[in-house]
Picture (cartoon, rainbow, N blue to C red):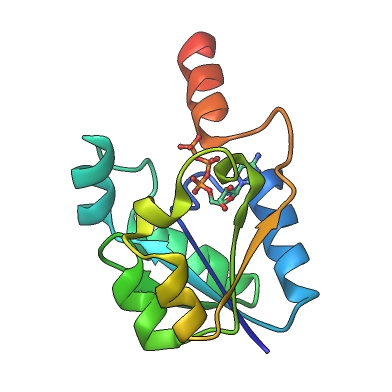
Length: 135
Ligand code: CTP
């Protein structure tokens, strides 16, 4: 089984680690890591860690990392995973419209969408807030 998860993974923290560890239970993990350009377009500002730094860190943790340059659909077609995993914070948002795909398209590719339980009280946003409050 091949499991793909796509995200930014800036300031890698326990929430990211928990998500990636959970993914491992389902098969061979492929991490789609958002490019600096995509993050800048999507969030309006660059990540704290460059793509190169984020990629290197995830690779050092043993993950197979691929650059994600758009909403994710290109990578999903390229990797053609059995499972597409995302944190459950996305369960109440519209993850499919985020990636620009429909359930029919996922079904046609035999991709199972999996929500992994979100780790409470930690996020890149929280880390950035803590940093700004401590300086
Ligand atoms: N994630 C998680 N638990 C957290 C934080 C993130 O499970 N506490 C998951 C997200 O749901 C996503 C992946 O980790 O599947 C990558 O999330 P990303 O957006 O890169 O990290 P966040 O910490 O959520 O970043 P931000 O605060 O900028 O939204």
